[in-house]
Image 1 (cartoon, helix red, strand yellow):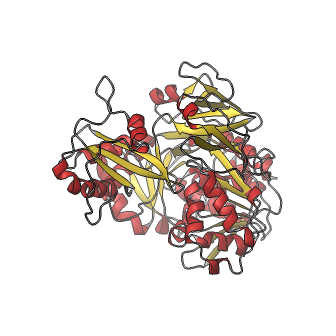
Image 2 (cartoon, one colour):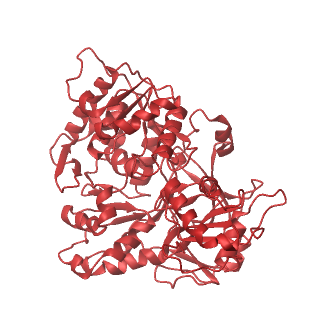
Image 3 (spheres, rainbow, N blue to C red):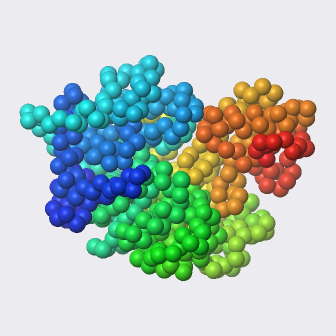
Length: 574
């Protein structure tokens, strides 16, 4: 069976040869492309040989910018078959900010030391601009002509070992300085065994996985492509664009295909409820869903409860909800809530939390009331996987007891070893065998609770943004005082939303709000939920003159930022 395999290549060879199990790709037009496992392996081998025929060799890095899901998956697996290291890069989502996109791709290509870049004819003209950025790329490869012919008979696929590099997962395609996580075949196999084993999803023979998640990010790629190969789970891959346009298609697909496993970020569960009309429930049957995972961004208990309530009438069971915690540096998953059990939340004193203590107010449960200004409700993300460890440590490395907030660290066979060719940052993150996540959290009753981020990372709809990148873009807006801008996120309506605070003059405030919102959208593709233009000199700073993001966020949430009066200008982001 594939889950005894030591590498992804061995897993592909061990998959059943019948027609009943494989990948189904749903097109934007509603058409299906179905590849049984044997055809997946055959096509991956063919593409691997064709890639080797270009002059690429085992260990070379191949950047992959391919938007079409079936072409992406088959090309990715082809590279793996050939021992070539694929480097998935997100395709350009819109016509905006083309220059910033090209620069980001160029940075990833250079950081990975990629020899070649694979793309499609539809994106070739934009991607070709990467060649002008000193990346040392030898050439662009285009999917359609490259894979149209037969593989050269003289090419032999190499042997693949568990210790071989499987692929590079860059941590944040949304920033100017993404880092490449080194994922070996062994890391991948170990993590898949952990999150699909009894301590995770507890894989069943009858399972069918369904996702609309982007396949170039770790949750979509590992969770629904590589992991499902390693554990032989038939999978339906829906176009991400379809969910964005009509979120209810997610539930329709779960009903149509009899899906049992799905995952999504918190925002998606809220959006599915918001966009669901009563008539959309007609004919749905969600009774087969046994796992509805939630991760990749802060988890709001009220959002998940709302989802369970909205779809209860069509068979959705609240115990299917599975909050989880993970990150690319741990391959994917770090901890999962126990499958088939009610969601657990912890109601803690808000004031005590500000002091680093998770002081419980009651035992908490999925039916508990939500948070208030005096109460925080934190979602349990389950215990560590078998063979793995989780600790909470203080700033000086001291192991903290239960209910004391500190940095989450973890170790085990799923944890990757380093960032690619980045020894300085690797030394900060990987210490004495432990992965220092940069996330704040605590342990209680065997569960890990994630409650903040040390690095001030902003996560909007599952995508990561570093605040300084946004701040630098805003600082170039005429009228904004440079080095006096703060970007942070807050929870609003069950979603994490972006807030910008910038110092400026009162007479310019109305114009600045619009200009700042436009610059953020142009530079990062984000919509600011609120732009606060504050009095000059009012942003809190450290003794060395640096703005304090956490303190600014706290003032905003308390309504204490010294904002210039908002005016009813049209198009105001506020």
